[in-house]
Length: 125
Image 1 (cartoon, one colour):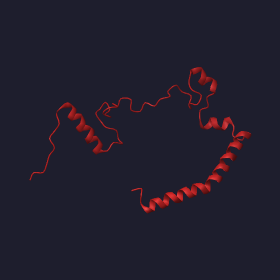
Image 2 (tube, one colour):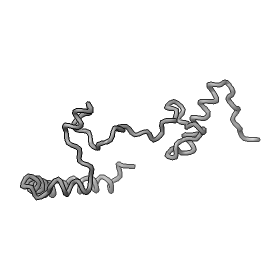
Image 3 (cartoon, helix red, strand yellow):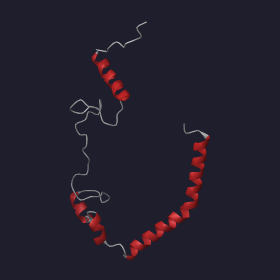
Image 4 (cartoon, helix red, strand yellow):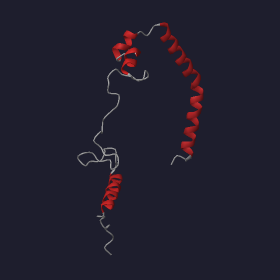
């Protein structure tokens, strides 16, 4: 689908637009960084928005300095009780992003491993 004439033209025009806007974006980035270096943006302003943790505290904890955030939980445990092999959670449910066709395919694979593969229904005539 991405090989149609319209999509090729759109891709070409987007590339030209990037070329045209690149100097303006670079100038804007440089001016923003220069304004930050002058002290117009203070740490007090940033502290209202985000939690600022000094690098020394992170080094004491043994964390990498590049990490953002001050708490100890650096990993996200959203689906910690989900099987990586079958993608089922503890209640036997598939993830919400999985469509029915994928779920059916995985279910058939599981059943085939158990040896209880069901016979597919064919046409009656």
